[in-house]
Length: 493
Image (cartoon, rainbow, N blue to C red; front, side, top):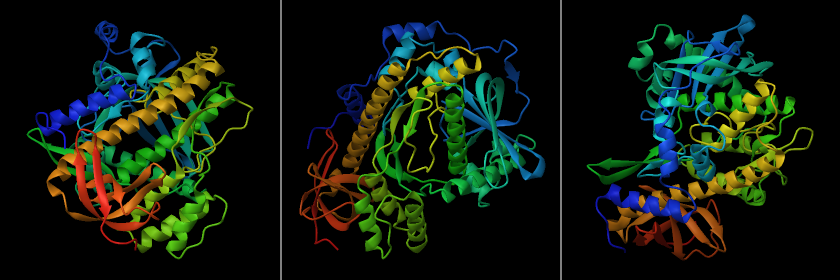
């Protein structure tokens, strides 16, 4: 085991910094970026007849409790016949981050904010992402508004996109809002402080549920994987706790998926090449079929999202405690999403997991570079201008953004493993129930639940495959490299 450096948080920050460099990501902003940022002193101001004034609407943000890089707001308006007009406002980051600027160059290199257990490495300087380009509470901001008419049956018969000035009336947080929506807690103070905001959120929630029902009817997968967050006490790592889905997170997820679909279709209708977010048909469908068979269920021999979702729904009801483990196995077997060039008139692959054909990333320009690209394309299309990116440039960006997203995920995963190794170091010899999360020539990996951690099986892994349940013994940890080694404690169940 390598020597420790400082407190748990300091040690993990050092590991994260080194991992960023090793993966070709920039952990720090260059002097040119810092100088350029210092010259930006105020948020972009609204000007021109093309920018609508929507500051009077009851906009709100819904995000993590501690999030300050707010990318989107939402507001609902009842329509005739039970339909609802949903407006999603996306921060106009391009108004301050100009293409080919030094700041844009840093964003181009990393392509995403990197959220590690010890430190966040923002894609944009925090002066922008958490302030001047953030849709912060009480601040007037420029935005791209994606407007959708959501019918009672959850379809979207009409949509529009335009520029507007907006004002965030309430910064709401996922957990408190979800508890209120589920009736297990009173209204959060920020919700109660704005007259009519409670009914506003309930209307949004109903519209989101209608959108979700349509997606699931088409085969969108209802997965429930466990994300973890690090808990520090006086600079020392105290625990890794699961950060679970809830109704407020689903509300935002449903709106963002719908808004991203509208963006993709809008750009195609305008004749603009763009970046699509795709998840290709899974190559390891045969293993997913085998997992279903182990549970006494049957799946077709060819990939079928609707059949897979029906199987998942059955298992969620039959064994809710273990459903996150099954979800993780399916996610691993589905593979990773990627960015792909979409040229109008040419065939494009959709997103298998979401069961949608037209899908892009456009709703988080403070955090993801593909979203900033989409925003620039939208603004050019709205202004009747030519595209700021050629198809060849977009093809290169699709590959680069996919690669850098993969590198960012590897950094996050390594720091998460280092944090878990730090917690598990005093527990050598302990035994844990585990699920196999990876099995290939490169090795076999399992995940345990207390704390949530993933490690490699170094002894007894023969014959194991993704989704198998096993009992393992902790035999070694290496905090510096994020290594957690297990041995099979008894045979495969």
